[in-house]
Length: 160
Image (cartoon, rainbow, N blue to C red; front, side):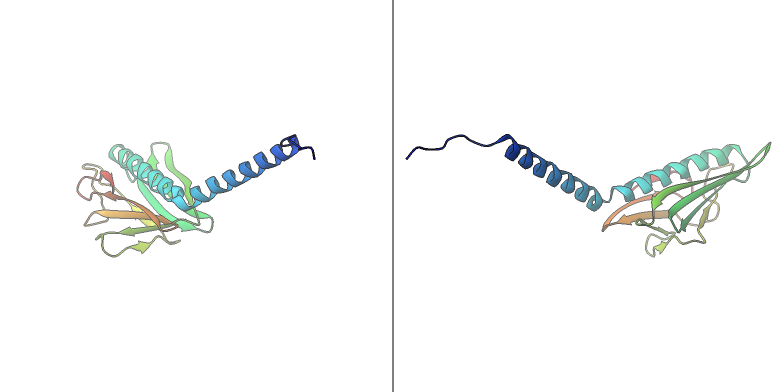
């Protein structure tokens, strides 16, 4: 009886490669969802907004930053007064899947809600105006958390 040693057809090879591609794509998407990357980006965006607002407040009067949770996610609203009049901008920094918490004592964390939290800096020193202690922020998604602190005396930030 003769042996049939023709090997694998081109169609079979293409099907196997397609299955491997689908499985690898699904695993990459799954890993990025589990890694909490959006929480890290939220903290990075928030820290950048805080630093920018502090810089603006040192040069302009009445600068304010309001962080709030809206229906589509977490937003940062920056407002200050220019010689030409008031200025305000709103920026979405995370989706509604990210939870953002803040604490003035680093013990009791409160989730940011729709009423928001207002941050103002002293024009002469850059220190936090409306808090008597350092302000801590923590963003969480899929049990991954990332945090940073605003020092009350200087207004400078540090990733924790």
